[in-house]
Structure formats: structure tokens, C-alpha cells
Length: 175
Image (cartoon, rainbow, N blue to C red):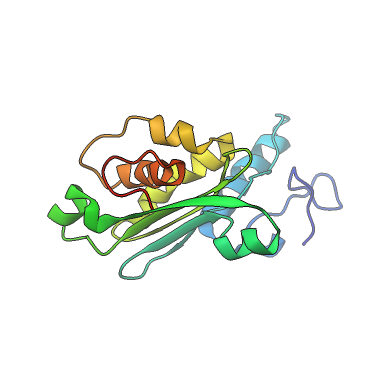
């Protein structure tokens, strides 16, 4: 079913959300659309205009991603820098028996803005949320890298990936 950004169908007082409006067919997308549709129906200014919708594969280990992949950035001709932080360098990952993970972030080479992120490892579906907020807010690598994260945590691996992209990492080699 085709809808506008306010999730209205071609009949202005009828709304559609979820799987019937197309991909991605994800519960969290549908829930957010439901909120937007109810706000619009109640007369509030609202629209469904996400920059990207996170995806999670509940496998072992979990895999989560948001925004562009390296391949998609290349296909679009976007020059990017990336940081990939191996969890084997994380004290929290090691102490949680979760060292087989990685946090990766892609940033626009010109603007520094986050283009996409991927996390593979324990609780990746929980950890991707920081990247979702960063992408929606237009955060740049330096913003993320300079944000103080609790230590030792798995969540700091996203900031460490940003540091690697910036070439400012002190916890591991800048490669």
C-alpha cells in the first residue's frame, strides 16, 4: 500500500503501517510508524522520515547494522573512511567471553558524518542503538570518538571504531 510521509493512503483519513507499506518488514519500524500515524490522526505535526532503519539478525553471535555498508558506499561513489574495532582488544568482551566480535563504523571522508555501522557480537542488537542516534543526528566521527563512554563496556567499542577512523585511537593500533 502506498503512503505519504505522514503514512496516509490515497484516502486522507486512512493510514497504513507495517509490512503492508513495504520493506523493511521489521517490528520496530511498524511500531514507530504506528506512533507517527496516531500522532497525525490526532492532529499533531509528525512524519515518518528516518534516515535509516536498524536491522538485527538474532544469530549467535548477533549481527546488527544501520545505514550504508562499504559495498553500498562504493557503489554510490561515496569516499569514506572506516574504523573497525576488534572486540579481542576489549577488556569487557574478554571478561564476558565475547571476544569474537567487532564494531565497525563508516564515515563520509569529506564531512566526517556517519554513513553506516555494523556490529557483530554479544548483544549487537542492543549496541547498534548508539549508531542509530548518531546517524539520525548527523554525528561526525570526532563527536563519537570524543564522547566519554563507560569503561570497560561493549558500548565503548563503537567510540573506539570512530577513533580508529579518525586515527586517534590509543587503545589499539591505528590501522
